[in-house]
Length: 243
Image 1 (tube, one colour):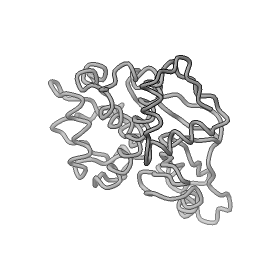
Image 2 (image 1 turned 120 degrees about the vertical axis):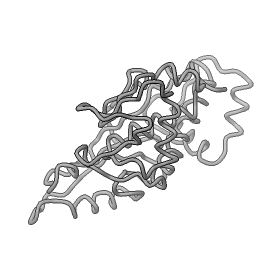
Image 3 (image 1 turned 90 degrees about the horizontal axis):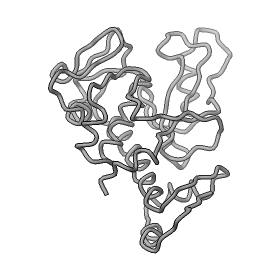
């Protein structure tokens, strides 16, 4: 359910004109049993645009050529990043926006696992949604690997099985053969589809089926989706909106 505390005519008019993926996201929010409260229509419109950019960034990463890799065999473009024991840090003098965009433009120079992919997708979506100058200020000194992320990215994890397009979910694989396949983080794209780095786009059933091929030999314990989801703090980020 959507609640706007201080509705205005201009915002209402924009909401009525939504189409495509933005309209789909609005309908998910409005039909949800969860209450989504906004001070203004602007905050809602920003969340819808950012969620759409999360989906776009997921599909861009899928086609970018980035490899699926453990930390041992990982790689980041050394022009922008330096490997440390905790992850990859920005090189001195590098703008965060340039470094994030490079991952999508020169994917062959990168290799990482699925949790890093989710954070990278979030960064790219935020970059495409807020002022570039604010992005470079907020995320200076980036450290990227696994679920390491800057506090200003502000990822929130909640319990529940009702997902909105742009949320990140997790498929657990209890009897994994290799640690890198202990599970799969995936972006919910809407209409029953998910994107997970290393597996690709598929339904929840297809995600589980793929993970079940990566279990210990003889295992009869199936992978499954956890009843939780992660999302950005959209209201906080809306203050930096490009529009």
